[in-house]
Amino acid sequence: MKAIGYQTATKTLSNHSFEAIELPIPTASGHDLLVEVKAISVNPVDAKIRANVSPEQGHKVIGWDAVGIVKAVGDKVSLFNLGDQVYYAGDLTRSGSNAEFQLVDERIVGRAPTTLNDAQAAALPLTSITAWELLFDRLQISRSNNAKPASLLVIGAAGGVGSILVQLAKQLTNLTVIGTASRVDSVSWLNALGVDQVLDHSQSLNAQRIEHNLAEFDYVISLTHTDQHLDEIIKVIKPQGKLALIDDPASFDILALKRKSISLHWEFMYTRSMFQTDDMIAQHQLLTELAELVDNGIIKTTLGQHLGKINIENLLKAHAILESHQSRSKLVLEGF
Image (cartoon, rainbow, N blue to C red; front, side, top):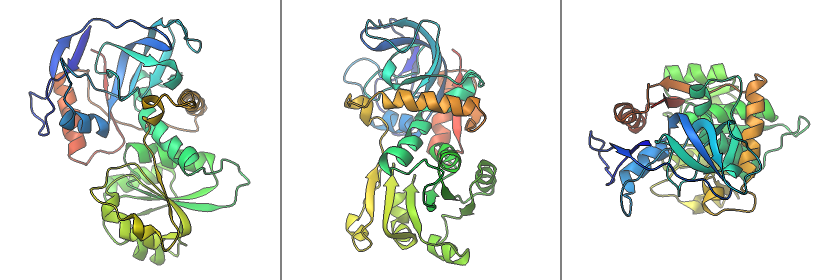
């Protein structure tokens, strides 16, 4: 099968960061599905792994978002059949989706939305799982319409995770949702997604909160540059509020959270697959429900740019966009 991989991590992106390779088609066993990959999206984690993780031997194939067709199943598979169209974000410890065929555990796979094409569906899995787990697993926000009204501030809301998170929060909870963005097109994007208000994270968040007569926030989700925003986060969050994050701060003064008794929650969507947790199937369940929400017109895809076929040139383009930190929503490639 065709695949795109590398033998050495490259912190600086170049034409030598990837190479086209031929690999044997893997064999499905246990809970594994063998999926023929039709479309992928490229995420910040792709760039981080490419820059920092070299394979112990041979080539490393990355990629953690895919849509494809089930071509074979392992002997323990019970959730899917041959020919099913599926979508998933994969497993950080296994070979990725930058290949014609991929093995993936059925417990982290969902049937793809029927109302989306492959590219539109490929934009959803990784960011949707992350957003869903942030809201409902880490922060344990209620999905009841009768829940006590509360407020959520999402820092970096126009990116891939934020674009799906604000939709889930608006559609499935009783939260007032405030997003942050600093560019005009990002503000327009968030308004189109239905956020209640947009603040500029390049300015003082607390000053803007006061200016707009907003109460301190019950929840804050920080998706990027948490270390840079921490002082402002502490100012805008309620006493006994909850802070969740997904990024990798260079430094983080947890003692600063003490005075307000702020609880801290990390989200890493690969935890369940990496450690084979007892509730690993929760990702199958949430992807299944997400597909229903999409097909019912409640949630829309966060596809931003379709960059063309799955090849070295377009992968390099996607990684360059991600490393510019100027991307909005999701970058998708389709077909070999």
